Image (cartoon, rainbow, N blue to C red):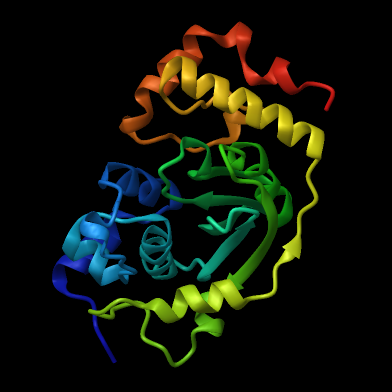
Length: 237
């Protein structure tokens, strides 16, 4: 059985809550897979390389928090543009929250305030709408059960089997309003053209976990423009 190194054990001991794991991941550079070389690194790979994309961040969070008694649960999204997203989910005092990393501010973690995983998933529907995206489904997967017998925690090589499993896993449908999506997409395009950054002024923004510093320009802009926020833009849809 593979064992944690001394440094890994120290890191895991320090990151003993989902909020601590989210803060740690926020400080890591996003893995943009330079040179066009796709990666899917395990927990050990994230530690050794010091960066992570969305699924790598989930694998890291799963291993760390599994050590602190949280089950290895992930939530997978499907989108019309096939740019899917994955988040780590957990339950705290009967409510659901998430830990996540993304190139988009609205697809990061959520505070543990949601009654069900579906309600948590729905909190990502609006921020998922960009130039091409729209959520169509979600699935909650226990990695420990789904990947039993496969070394996804400590592998030194890419763990593509995890990605293939998530792509093939049956997803529950999420129905979203076409009219709302069109308004969101038009607003998103106009915002990006005007400001050159990605928006954060969404309904339910107060339920998001703190964002990485890279999104500070968007956060400052939102604070300066509260009266023109998306809340008013989509009310009634």
